Image: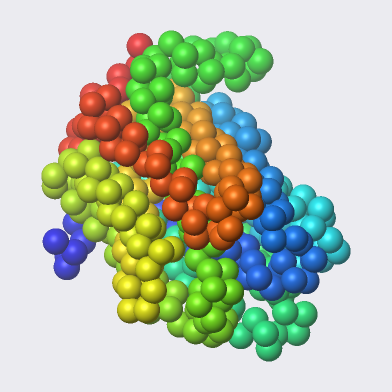
Length: 414
């Protein structure tokens, strides 16, 4: 099932390499907060009860990121992707110079604007350029390439206590994509589906054309958007909080050193790219819905056991968390790109991403509120799992199957 790649054109392989490289750097910057949370917390004197609120603020960067996705439906995918790469590179680097928690949160908030926009636009580009029978595999492989950014971050984090300036050095390395900007500019081209859409759409004023994606969002397939967001909300509410506190739990509760945490992430971290590719393959073969439902159940169980178990159960449950989470994320990203037409595909992906991030921010805030009465982060996260059964029910009943269908047949323009 995973041994042989489907036949791709040279342009498709090249596109995967370009957007995968950009995603690698974006995921590097995204993962630093969770990895180095204890070090950042100590360096900036952040109180234990304020950790959830700070990360929730950072997560709100998805709101302006949504506006970038809307612009991509008017001006094109290429120019906005290039802008996001420059944006997250500069802001990740700037984070290294934060003097207090407020400056850190501000820099990371803006960085997440560009990181979130880059991730959602990359999926749209692959969905539009890959054939129906391999679209899931392509999105899965993109996710796998992007997860290597987490591996790079884990490698650097392993020596965080020995780096000059400690955790700040991790963010300084975020400047590296700037040296590849020329390659990104030469390699990224506009998708053929968007070019056809731009040539065919009615010539209207600039202001009116900019609002068209919003009109289409309300007019075309609104029930799909409602069902997609309703399924995503309970997942994002718990999963991002659970993943954020993994490194902190391992270090503060179980006594793991940064090097040991990094070793665990690097050894079990192979399950993250495996989960992306596995999800794409299985979803192309058996359908998106059944694979998502199974992954949702496994993820909830693994979170519960990881935070409440001990000893030999900790590493395998962390591995299962990674595997199931990557499967969930890549398939929801695929659905957001497949269920809607080209005229507002990027906007729809932005809505999906924004709603998920807002739910994640709410989850982080709720975790901070529950921390007092629960007495620990582990118990607070466990209490939050009560909402998880909602998601598989909505997926099973209200979302259509998209596997092996052309995008124009799934969601024709109305």
